[in-house]
Each structure stands twice: as structure tokens, then as C-alpha cells.
Length: 130
Image (cartoon, helix red, strand yellow):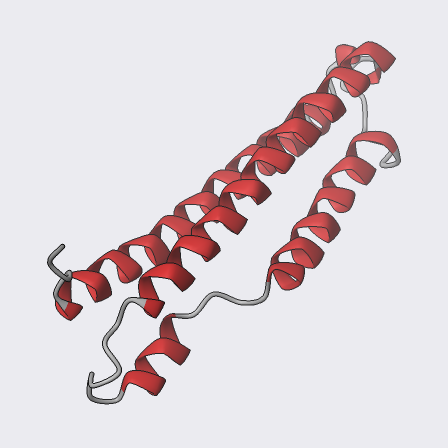
């Protein structure tokens, strides 16, 4: 089997790093949407059914999103391991393209998840209907 050229491997690794940004952007959009629904002040936002539904849906989305981030990190690590040892500045390239540790993704993601869920359940959103 023929080895993949280092330039292609680097291109794939950079593209996967960009894909991670896409996952964070999607997360921010969904989290903002959930908080936006609650902040709308409509009477339906006080419904326990809505809060439970939003919470469960968001939790499922957050788990899938975080799993995708972990998988992208694993793929980036595998791609970087394919770089030949003779590549000039290999250590610097690998360091700059390596993902953070999975616990770092998890800690930040779970903190953000808790903030969104706290906003759903604990923030006394103003009601437009008195």
C-alpha cells in the first residue's frame, strides 16, 4: 500500500481542525436558540413540559456533539501519527495541529451544557403576558 503524501495528511488534519470549529459553531447556535426560546417571554415558556422537552433534546444534542468532537480529536491524532519522522519541523507541526486532551473538551462542554440547562430551569425569564 502506498503511503499518503505528508502534504495530503497535513491538509486532512487542518480540514478536521476546521470541522471542530463547525461543531462549536453549531453548538453555539443551538444553545443560543434554546436560551432564545426561553427569553422570548411567551407564556408557553413556563410550561414544565417545554422545559423537560428542551432539556432532554438539548442534552441528547450536547452528547452527540461532544462525541463528534472526541472522534475528530482521535482522527486528528491518527492523521498526525501518519506524518513521516523526516518531515521538517515535525514536532512543531504536530504540536500546533494536535487537539486538546479529551477531558478539556469535556470540561468546557459540560460547563456550557450546565449553563444552558440552568438558564432553562433557574432563570426567571420575564413574561410578556401578565
